[in-house]
Length: 476
Image (cartoon, rainbow, N blue to C red; front, side, top):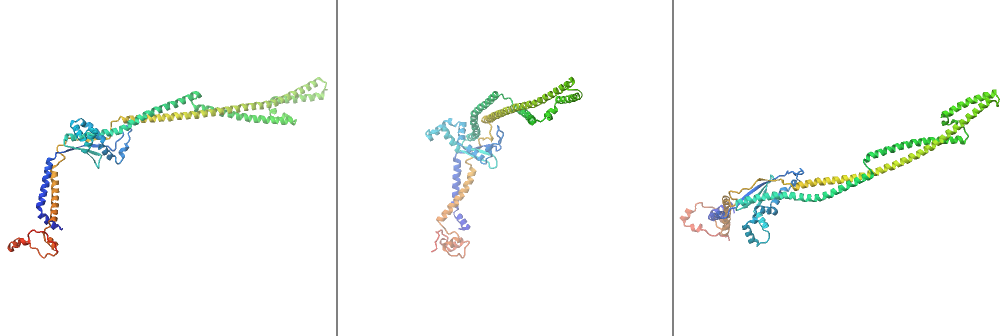
């Protein structure tokens, strides 16, 4: 079918198209006038994406998620929010609502849940694509109730959102309260063990006492080294003295003998006495009193010198014994000081362990106390990141039905239906309306078309023969 044939069919069936259009428009206007009007109003909510926690001062992590707005839309349309709206509107107290509830449910279930489901059917939530504004739209035949319901849903959503934030904080605060008591008991127990250990061991400042004892150990060790050197030197002198004695050598060459001033004095006096004795021997006889006196003096000096040398030898032996005894005492003192220092180190290590236990218990208690304070404040907060931008007001004009819009739509729909009916009627009752139809029906070419056939048909009397309305002839 060509476009020209389509236009010819419409021109032939224009009455059917007009009748369909008129009927459609009439029905639409009548329905628009008969149907009860329905009013629609909306509450605008602003959801802050960059909300900051009022207690901790950090960015709320849930608001950084891509589906945050979609989640909020689902919350607004949830049954829990609808229940809050029912309670806020006090619909369950209405006798009309109770009567209708009994009629439709025979008293089964809860009237609040039934009313919540009814409210959700008329609720529409539209989030903005380019902003964080969400429209809460409610439709109802009563404009005042529509505005009240939209505002009730907005307030119920804000309360539910706040409850979702506060409820976990309350449960966490209760849990932290119990944990805080245990941590406080552990901290007090650790502090008590540390105090008892300090009291039992007499510890005031482990580091200061350890420094003092370390200094004492260093001093005793230094003295031991000095005594060991002196003992070694005394042992060498004694060994040398024993060698001189065993070999019957003169001990006058010993350093101690040479260094003794008494022995030196005795030697000088002995030399002088021997000189006098030699002189007396040359001039006097042995029985002469002067000679005998000189001899007696020399013998006396020899004896004194020998006694003094023996004294020096005994001093060497005594010094060695004293040094060995002193060395043993210093060794014992060093061992005792080391043991004492090791004990102090052990006390310091045990004290450090107890201090760490106290510090760990204190840090755990302080961290739990801080977290408990935060969760307690969070459980008591009444701030949210949602605000009402513009509350719903009772609309003046109904949102449905809109007469002008319905008429315009009915014209479009009626025209489409009329055209459709015309084409369907033409398919059921096909007519020859143009040269193309005739050529298609007979399967022969058309050689010519008479533009003005009305006058010719009247003159020839062939009008009824050629132009009568007849069914389309099918070619044989």
